[in-house]
Image 1 (tube, helix red, strand yellow):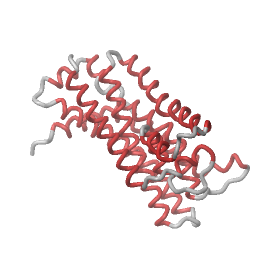
Image 2 (image 1 turned 180 degrees about the vertical axis):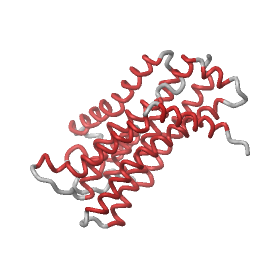
Image 3 (image 1 turned 90 degrees about the vertical axis):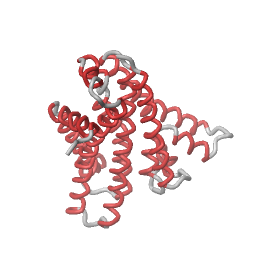
Image 4 (image 1 turned 180 degrees about the horizontal axis):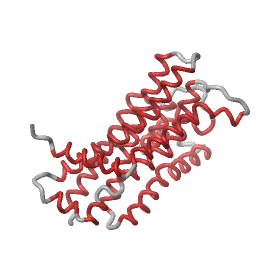
Length: 275
């Protein structure tokens, strides 16, 4: 039975990540993050107790929005520029496979890596909470964590694609590293700071619709909105995400649109790239 070139390339990317210990490294980071926030987050208040489910998801999403994009781009930033430097990309293109298949194979492989690491870390946390957290309703807990894991995977895929775009536009791995740090800084920190500054300024022409559009223009803000929407306990800067007027399905649709647009951009850049 003939195996699809997409699956062959995906398998290669997964094997390379396993060989480089990337999967183990990212899994440990996510697991330590998840367990520490869940079981030791209350220590700052001088006590050890399990948080409410809304507070837990809020805390996890607030911290994950910094870690997941960076981890996703670190996995993908050398997908093209690294192979170009080593000469394997030219060899790969000499085979009877299209550039679209190469792109999709790499995306499948790197996405599976992030799916496994995110699912393992946060899934294990949910299982432990079911075992020791008697105050949680199992159905509600599984629903909340399922949504959190799904949105985390979608955020990771979006930033894997941003990593590809950086990799395709870079001529050296060192420049690609600097570029992904810049992209991460802009999306995760600078954009939020500008958005919060606008909200604090309380400009007369700003309404909830404009805020919704501004949130939709950044996948990290979409991620926060998906996980915080409808939570009445959120306060301060996080309240704007919980007050988004769009439903969760609409937010998921916009995140899918982000992924689709990034796939298109990456494919067009790869199509025009000369070796």
